[in-house]
Image (cartoon, rainbow, N blue to C red; front, side, top):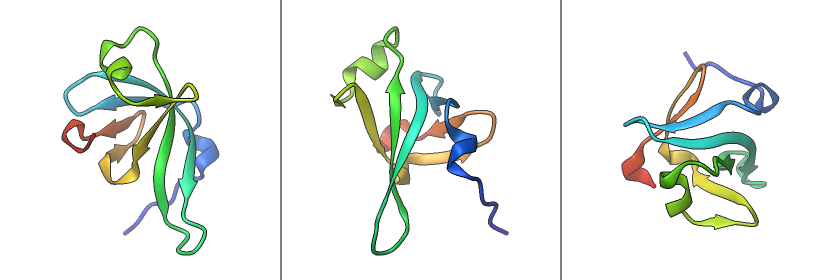
Length: 83
């Protein structure tokens, strides 16, 4: 059974990798206008995270593929290998 979550419930959730690196906080999502599927999540990077600073930050935001999302609960977990 698929559990649906409203995007507004995700805003501000911590985004971390599956091996414990803090990336930042969820801010928004990109949705394909044709298919309606989620394509990317936009993350406000943690300025103190050395790992996040190594990723491609554009306009102050990280755009991470939704395919990298492993789990969503108290935080959003990303598969580090997918980055």
